[in-house]
Image (tube, rainbow, N blue to C red; front, side):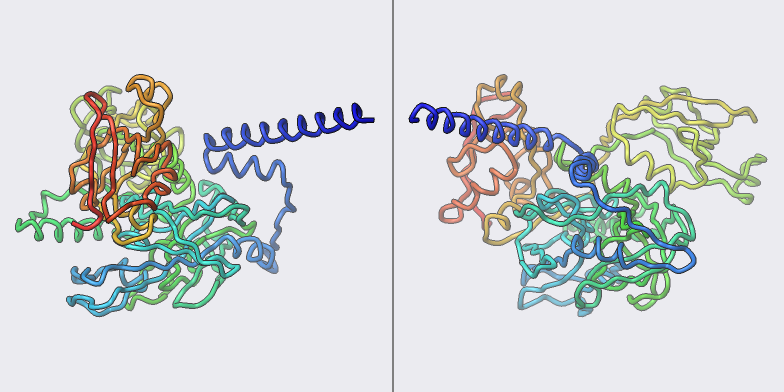
Length: 518
């Protein structure tokens, strides 16, 4: 009898170990997947009923019920000494819902609100860059009323997209769609937290795609002017380089202040865009809203997880959209396509044989009629990816295979957060991290480590000249192997001094003591 009992216990323990080992394997495998692959795996194991909608009698109840739990309320806090509204008219500020007092210092911390979309059950959330930029503290309120502090994983001012994360599991998330399939005239829903209200759903149609409003470029230019003026330098217009990428989905679904970072979904409840801005003379809804296409959002979010920054590949050309007036000016008959007016020396396009005066008509066999279309599709790709460009020269159509090159242009400077909790200190570092590979750890002779992949202007790392590429092995005496480890270790910061141990790519070990306040 004892023997049987022992056998049963042994079998039971063996089963538990097997299940635990399988779960660990699944977790590791999932950590290497893109967000779209993670969702596909989830739905393969958790089949869901298809959401339907009738064109003759639109019914969005299923879509709204499926999406609303995955759209969250974001609350941000700013320092008392920070000055907002330094520019004559900050469009993002108006849309986001910041108070309209201008040109004055705040004596009390300022709070603002926006929206975000959960895209994975373990707490990753996409929102707008302008929702969390400059924030000292970011909090997320879920639909079940829980309020959790969020960590900024990455921000991309070029597209106005940011990725943040909360420590939670089993969360409802919004199913990722395909923005390439979006059709003008199809029904869409906008879900968010406008004007201080609770979760709100509005309906409309897609009124245009590939739309450029100039809002991101304008914000980048105003930020550039402020930074130059703070340095005592008078900026010149021709010195400014815009990296903005705008190819918005335009909708007439009602969007207002606070909808920033919320979801634009189709009638099947699939995320097709992140609401970003509106066209309005007053700052309130006037008929047109604009969302960043989800296919671009997916790429940016995946880059933050995989590389710690957005990997951008370049064709290496400057161009201008053709129209009858410009064609007449050039003395050519073509009125459609993109006229190449410059080619970067030793760039990808030049190496593929493209020259000044060529007219680009297609990308991977899809017609290209606007600069917004080309920029958005190329931004989804990474250095080393190949694209087929179709172009016209001397009236004849030709094809070229272009291998995109690394974007080595100066990045838009970003500012980071400030204050006390581990998450706040993490954000204040102004850095991005990815786990060091086993090969890199072996090369450096260390057993733990994260690689610094981003150093943002005005963060602690920038101020104390911590360089990209540094492998950090310990924070406050604790070994670190992930961004989460870094944040956890920051909770033991003593007397406002962060102790960092690292190894440069070449060189001996370094010890850094970085004060939280400086």
